[in-house]
Length: 279
Image (cartoon, rainbow, N blue to C red; front, side, top):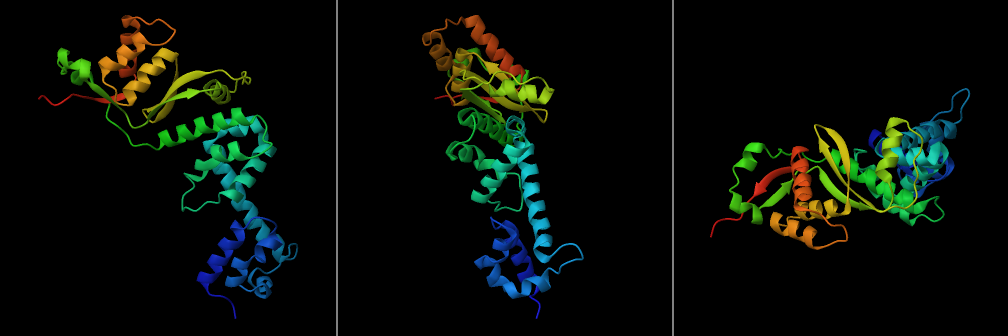
């Protein structure tokens, strides 16, 4: 007696998701609980050129290829650096440890940076971890909600005496990051089809944001990063400016600080100015 449709679907999923060879997948405890191994040749009948294991192997291979395609879309820099063979090996090990548990593949790669950092023997591990972390950030920002953008009218409505304690609310699709490798430059070279840039360790800072449904990033000097990071984390404008003017090795003038601020507003990095309630 053939298994019912529901059991057949669950069996197919169990076999496709099981790591190892096709024979190991069919013989796995979960698969055998749904469809006895003796029923497998009748469920997946051989063709003139392929036996039952070959035929189920086609589906298993297609599934892994789809996962690799989804991860390559989210991690093009990683795929470019590793090349087809090493990237395929990375994906196979990753989905074995962290199989897809969702109806969508949008968040399949959320643990890939963690996997790269923990996997022994991976080439250029520190650089690839930083690259994957940066690409994951961009993927999340791409899916973030759309925010309104701070307008000149809203800025003009703020009383001059209120700017000292005003807080700037960033758009949802924005993040600032301190980085240890030039991963932004590497990704830009991949996008443009340019020769691979140097990937030696080099501390730098960046803001990543989405504007008009396109992801962008800007390199920042360390003082600019300190200022923007403070503003994004809700530090009042006056205090944030004072921190940068007081601290750090690089001397920064007020003109430069306000130039950065104007540029960030123009780029649409903030959505609102929040003022303290009057006493």
